[in-house]
Image (tube, rainbow, N blue to C red; front, side, top):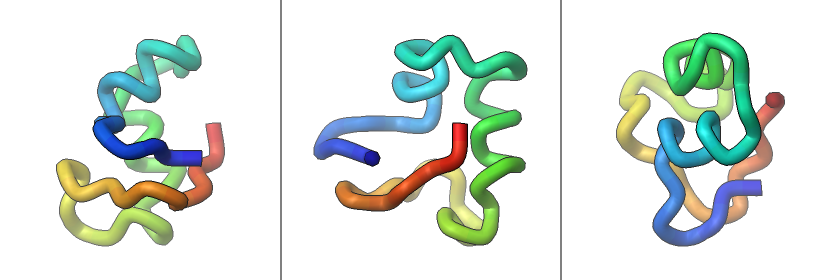
Amino acid sequence: MVQAGDTLASIAERMNVPGGWQALYERNHDVLGADPNLVRPGQQLSL
């Protein structure tokens, strides 16, 4: 779950997501929408 202050890059690094934030964004485009810089606390992302 996204926490306040999280970014895709910080989540990808913390969770060791292969492909980094770009891969995390691609997997979760339907949740995140068109702006990968806009993540909201409480969003559920697929790792």
